[in-house]
Image (tube, rainbow, N blue to C red; front, side, top):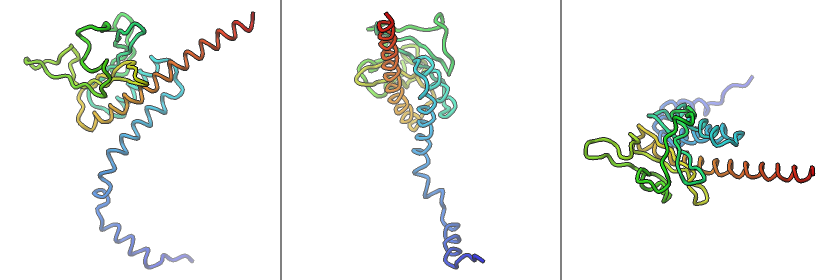
Length: 195
């Protein structure tokens, strides 16, 4: 018969006396952020279409981060930004807002590559550039901006997480672009080989 050793009982009683939540509290927020990031990245691994990717990312933000509304804008080859996803829903082409390259409507800092752009409120209390929120997180990879996330209702902890999400989204979108280029080249090579 296996009887618990006396020192095991003392350890169990000692563990009950310690406030474990207080000891583990500093680790709760970073662990939660890593879990959210893991869900977003894992859910995006099998997708190569940029629009499917960002719809998934927006939905994962709603599911795991909560907070206020979010919108994702993608950059086209001409340098224009299109609002492509709003709160997890892919917008139809006629619903998409456009910010033209070099426009005064472009949020300051998006093109320059800052990690986060905090939009100040206008004197009347409204937000500048019509975004209605103040936190904008550019998607950057290899020095290129491929889009940005506009997030509302975020606090300091959420902003840290949104920065991580935006960073990884930039990498994921760059990988998607490279994957599409490889598919195009492979298709051309297959066509040439058939001739």
